[in-house]
Amino acid sequence: MSEKKIKILLAEDDENLGGLLSSYLKAKGYYTVLCVNGKDAYIAFEKESFDICIFDIMMPIKDGITLAKEIRKIDKKTPIILLTAKSMKEDQIEGFESGVDDYITKPFSMEILLLRVKALIKRIYGSDETQVTDTIINFGGFLFNYKLQELSYLEGEIHKLTSKEADLLKLLCENINNVVDRGFALNRIWGDDSYFNARSMDVYVTKLRKFLKEDPDIEILNIHGKGFKLVTK
Image (cartoon, rainbow, N blue to C red):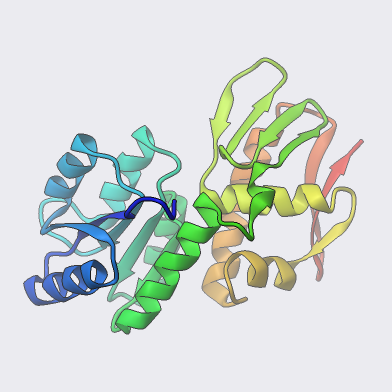
């Protein structure tokens, strides 16, 4: 990814904030396309490929969560950050359930946004320090390609995972039949163990369990007061 300019799709209906964010990202070396509503952003996403998306939740015509859901139907991998002025837990949880990778609550500093963008790009697309992204893991009847974020059972359907689903599954696989501490998982994957991140992790564990049901000998257990354990029978 370091050999080409990172392309960012930015959707923000506030003209002043959108202009500031776009100018800042461009100044930092990112190719940035700014759209003022979700409908235009979806059209832009269909026309060209992007490396990362940043969407405001509250937008006219099509809101950020609806936009994220529609994009996830056609693209499971491209990371999405939601910008929200809301503090409602339900909105943040719905955002993670829609397949987004991160959210930032307004007001925020440009530096924080830049750090989140860099962290997502490094985790998803890799760097010299993250060659582990080439890992292919076999467990039970499953084949898990971490780099491609794909999980398949025997010769069956290939499930596309979000970046955080892939990170979480990889962590569980690295500790198969051992307990993964809840706080450790939150800090390693989300960067902190806040209530909102804990709730979003529970959502991803539920989604992974749904995929893993294909093999009756594989299960993710809740270990009360500690964390999770991926077990093989």
